[in-house]
Length: 306
Image 1 (cartoon, rainbow, N blue to C red):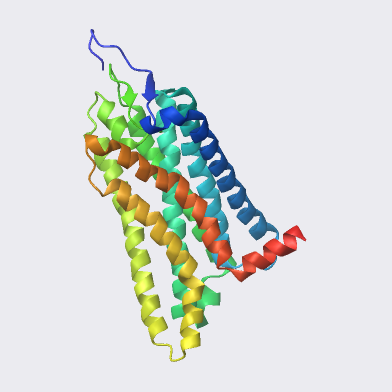
Image 2 (tube, one colour):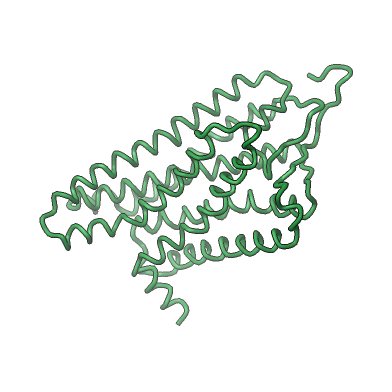
């Protein structure tokens, strides 16, 4: 509870990027263009996989849902960023701020689960090809995808219940372009120990542990590929998982840069740029990586436009 001489905060003020203030219109147009490109290319991936009969394999079902999560994550971050760029600061209600963080976590957890499912799919296809059709059938693939969305929803909803109970008094300035967990907890005048540990536990078990599973899967995949006697066979086997491996490196690389690299007050702008990499650059390059290296997607794209 706020003391008698303290004012209860109902709105936060987002400061955004100081370096964009002098180039407001140019920055706005640039990020608007990037946002339109991200949404367009991810919607194209969703459309191609939905209408093409050649793209009904489990890997493409995972990819379609990953594109949906990318659109959700990018819209959640870039739309507030565009408002901040135009107005230099943006006021946001406390409940809306927490909901913004909810969408960030929800889409992030879904992406983590889907990437893990995709690595399991590649593990079965390369290491156990004879059992692949039995284990990774359409029904099991659908279960994995639905479980990714459902588990993420349940886990993040439980954390949001804790965050909505926090009180905020006096201070209301967030030196960021959207609402993240660190500034929310820092501004709260309530006891944030439980919320901090709960957030850390969720991140540990549902981002770090899936990352370890992906690493173990690729260790097994690499060992299996190295045992293939034919060089052509090795190249063909590696090409089937190279796109997914590139996306995994991009996704987890930016997450590690944001949350594991120490940041001080002096490096706040650097941390904001690293967050921008995760919320903008990753969803931008994911469809490009999959499209450029996948002849089936390119073929489906040609048929769609013809």
